[in-house]
Image 1 (cartoon, rainbow, N blue to C red):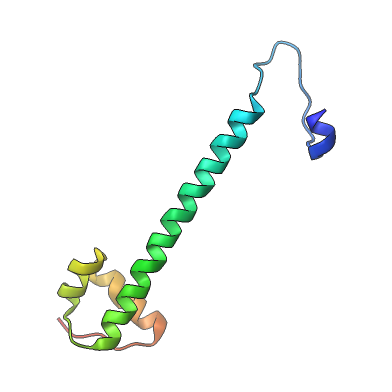
Image 2: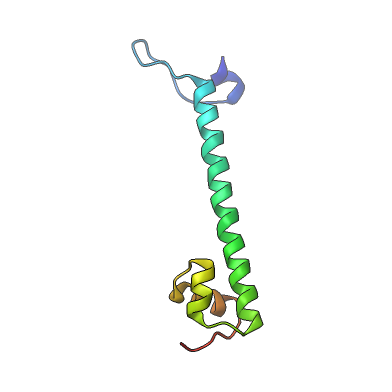
Length: 88
């Protein structure tokens, strides 16, 4: 019945393991939520990096300590945003 409503194209064969769709959907939702949280954290770190670079008062090493980004990653962010970065 789920195949009909969800337009799934799979066939259930006798003898195959049953799939708990509720569990599968819960797992999918949890995975999606965790992925969204990780992406949000990454975006926040990028925004913080851009803000610190814009201030122009901290070294790359100091920004790295705050954001936990490598110096190379900070340089990549600066270049992608058209911002100057301090020379170490």
